[in-house]
Amino acid sequence: MKSTVFIGGGRITSALLAGLRLAKYRRPLRVYDHHLENLQRLKKQYGVSTDNDLRSAISQARMLVIAVRPASVRNLLKKISDMNQRLIVVSLAAGVPLAKLRKRLGRQVLWARAMPSPACRSGRGLTALTFTPNFPSAAKREVNNLFSAVGLILEVPESQFDAFTVTYSSSHGYHALATLAEAAEKLGLEKRIAVLAAAHALADGIAAWREGNVSLETLLQEAATPGGIAATVIKAMDRSGYKRSVQRGLAAGFSRATKNNKLI
Image (tube, rainbow, N blue to C red; front, side, top):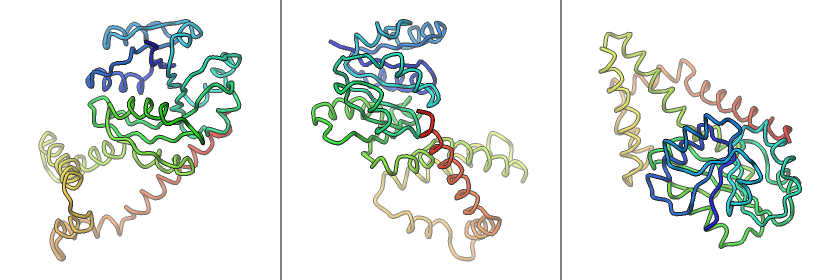
């Protein structure tokens, strides 16, 4: 059986491999990287096959997952531009559109883009997928099967991919958790208790919304009674520019993502 081959052995590949092993994904897994230490680490941790020869790795692939930095995509595709192998190729490169990727490899390549979350490590990931027009349904199922093994999948129009990228990152949660816990410590809470309280405020409340059938607006009204402590906190945060800060942050990330369009 041909393999699912990851080109690049960095953080997102590691997270995906952890989730795929947890899910007992059946297709053979192989990783190419030019850093031998990365290959040794991944082989030891996840029992995957490894290769430090790019063409050798590709020759064994049914599906190729490009997991390198956007700035490295151009050179990678140059190295394999003469490839005439029929392949499904999934790019994880943020901001690099399918139209540009399609020009770099032969007609036999079926292109898709995916934006998986590092939370896929535990099987609780979220992955946006988009496909070139007329992408065969059987090949689409293969891509869906790969990423659905590590969490939820959403098919998102490519025109919305950059907006999704700057919104879905688990870094928002970690940043909010660290900020909320730090503020609680300044009020006198012991660090361990501050982190637990902040984690409950963020993770457990959101999990309750996700697993239930009550709207976000209803839950917010329920949690923040007018004139109460929670409502007072929210009003003060909004007056201090909380919403404006989030909007500016996403806008900056969106701008950075669109610049990757020029890298290839």
